[in-house]
Length: 328
Image 1: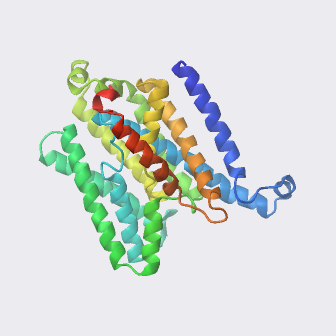
Image 2: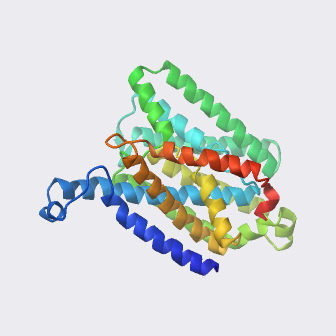
Image 3: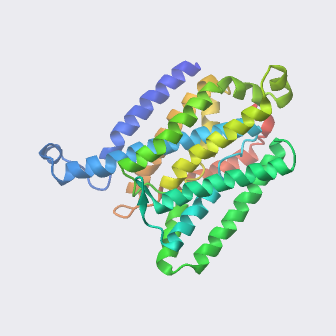
């Protein structure tokens, strides 16, 4: 099937899933209740709809970030988790919870602001370590990202161990990733990062195609490889930081979705960028619906659902013999 036809199918499926998701849950809605403007209408308007919108935005951002990192580093396992962005954001949120920073500034809660600051800190550390080694090589950047990720993960464990039972449980729920407390303000805080990052990735689609073929070929075609990698790395990291600060570190979306999209539309980023955004958004909306209903009336964090799907997918990716050459 041609990529354009696949994109049309993706768009139609994403629209249907997103439109149906607010009405799916342990308790259904009646037409009479919705028209009366009572509790059911309020639940739909103030809880379900913003949650679905936030899930779509977060899923699209995580999928696009995974696609960008995999293309930049020509590594099928490169994700925001690999490069330490999610770990830094999680540490910021855990530290804010431990210190009792529960205030709200400019519509952003203390843990969310600290999470974004943690993402910025981890991004700066990764870049600083890479710069000290000289240049902006892919191997050094990946190794620095892994080292920073382990460092912040150990700090999270330390903060959890020193916290009381209540705060330790809140930290645990945060690092699982979830959408149970999002509202319209959360969506507005994510949108600037999501839109700016998505536009930049679309504008850089030709450069990403050339980077897939190797740095030398990209340079011969006039691409300023070091500059492009640096700009995209910081842009994607900020985009992920904006999402993680609201939803927590929802894992495996950035690894699974780009590979599924490559299988259906190919490696050309002219189709892969919109396909990843549409598929990633619809995928996380569907996972969030499953998180709401699978243990009804209890609710699972959506990060648990994505991890249950991502574990087997990771093993398949490992055992199938895919390596960086399969991305080119």
